[in-house]
Length: 168
Image 1 (tube, rainbow, N blue to C red):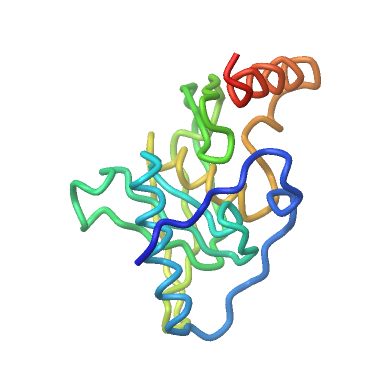
Image 2 (image 1 turned 45 degrees about the horizontal axis):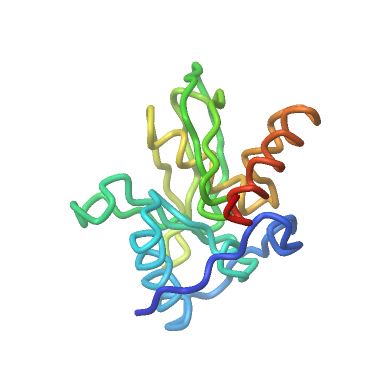
């Protein structure tokens, strides 16, 4: 297991649609473990493979931040099939370190997800888990959370991020 470098806003790999995963391999199992280690090291609730430069439909979520192994979720070729309600809350991203913005997301989300053996099942998430599902699946579709804001707000966020990166 290894902590992998996280690519940041501006890297073109974050804008690509990810490829579906076919057969499950030992390399993919290693990648899953590395993603959990990376998210934990970076103090994130989850991370998607594109954030470490690998454009595969694979992400991990652990809303317990390592405290409860039973809460670890692996998303393989996930697809949101239903959303209900709305919630407004603070959101950040490991690929945009230091930036947190208030964003509206669904309150309740159902996700069609694949197991490593190729069978499908449905996951359900509310509140923080629903937010995490949406955020990570957005990464798999080449979308960052800042893209939900209009151009003026996005420019303000980008300037803020550039100041953080330059240390000013």
